[in-house]
Image (cartoon, rainbow, N blue to C red; front, top):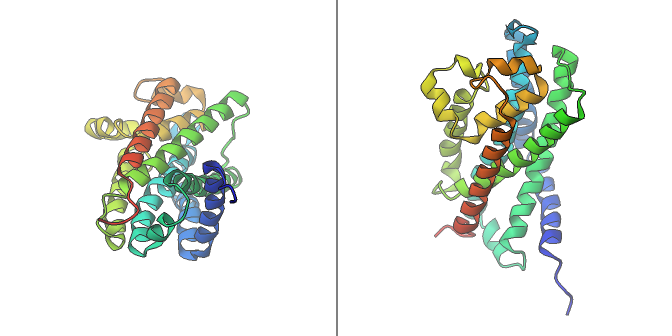
Length: 264
């Protein structure tokens, strides 16, 4: 009898299948991969002034778009696609295979990571070429960015899987998930300077990971002097990583405990 591949190996194979399936959906590819770049081009062209000494709005907005891309590719995409896969029988067919749920999760995470990586590359190239964004030269900055990418991607994906149990059907998933994402983007400082938002919005957003993702990415791509313009007058790097790690674990635990192959 042939020995089954390991859980990780099956997850890796599933990830490659997920990427191929995603690339076949042209509308999803354009919306997911290019939409953040399009928004950056629009907002960066309209708001050309400085929000602080030496910091243009386009620089600030770049951080928000990268963070938003993580949430869109992870939370939004999975919270919508998984209910659709339940409805069309895809998950039921996968359940009949030897592949465990963990491998399925790994496959989704690989797809999300590939999508986010491509978006980040596009945003950085667009920011440098068209809006004069200066990339950090410190290895420490890129190390922090890598940690934020890992925790942010993992947390976004795990929360997306966890939230996928909420929509009652794949047809209605978008109507439930999309408003949640839009509200969090407005509350978390994606489209506006966070400290200019009402205090109650800031307090509400501080509970959720998107606000911390935005702040963490700002700490990488904005001058250190801009930290004084944050709520705590510092980047709070340690707290950012802690909050993102907590949400990653919370999403993972909920996903494992609530995930269903079939709609019951």
